[in-house]
Length: 133
Image 1 (cartoon, rainbow, N blue to C red):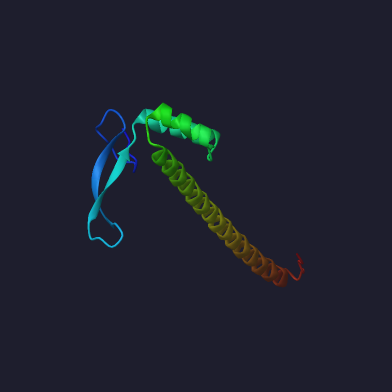
Image 2 (cartoon, one colour):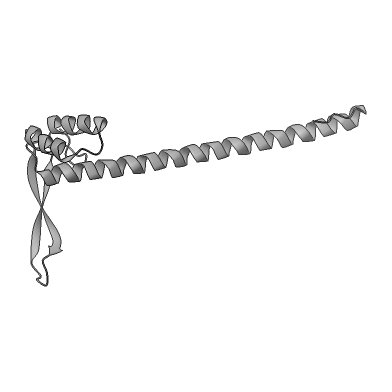
């Protein structure tokens, strides 16, 4: 079963695991406990299916997801925010990779053009024929 951060979990249904945080309230040095929700496969499937249909669900859809998954509205909201952010980051990385590949192909084409031009120029001088291209 996958956890919220992509790790394995041993719980059967979505639950919470405690994790110490260093957040403090206004002016106090008290530490609060941050709860990390671990999603089960069924919850992830439901969220991913809904996300595939609409990455920005309205309030009604979010409420239905709360009922279907048993997760809190905040967990639903944060999951969608995180998923959109991850998808945007992945998209930007793919565009960057495609640009790098295109630039590499352009360099190869320019190199081959230069090699061919040198060869044609040299060949034309040796045979007395002038190839212009």
